[in-house]
Image (cartoon, rainbow, N blue to C red; front, top):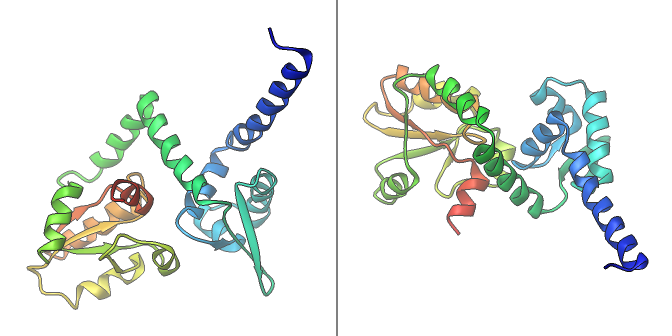
Amino acid sequence: MLSHSEASIKERLYQQYARIGKCLSSDKRLELLDLLSNGPKSVEILAQQTGMSVANVSRHLQVMLDSRLVKFRKEGTYAIYNLGDPVVSEFLMVLWKLCENRLSDIPRIKEDLLQQYEGMQTIAKEELLERMAANKIVVLDIRPKDEYEAGHIEGAISVPLEELDTYLQTLPSHIELAAYCRGPYCVNTTEAVERILKKGFTAYRIDEGVHAWNLKHV
């Protein structure tokens, strides 16, 4: 049986663990963490990308700052936020995998998403690596350039979604392309591949985001 002192220490320990759990109980904060896992961003950019107000984003960031899940630096009048530590990104990947394994709604949501783009092919990472090594395919990172610069799949070219149509005009139609964004549920990937296909190219989705890719290719 634990002594009173040992029980008190154990209780205090779990209370500290619960701080992270409580911080992650908001879907909006999870979304912000996911965006920050792709690179540093200002409050204003986070508000733009999530559709939240700057005030709401700031409140959520303060909660995560108190739990040390994020950190920030000042650039002039702007506060630039980033994940507090690379281990936060690793934790998010484990959380996504746990949720996919335990929550049956998530695969159904993914299937609903993919059904909107029937005929769109996803390329397996082993096959993609072989084609990249043989220079038979071009990999496009369609995220904003700052996210690409923060980290990307080795060999990928930065072509933000808004620049995609212009970029495609520079390529011969026999070139095969594969596109990725922030992970399997990022609708920008499917939009990009759909636009590429309409231009007459052969194109594939890459389900992995950068962190999932790097965790599997270390």
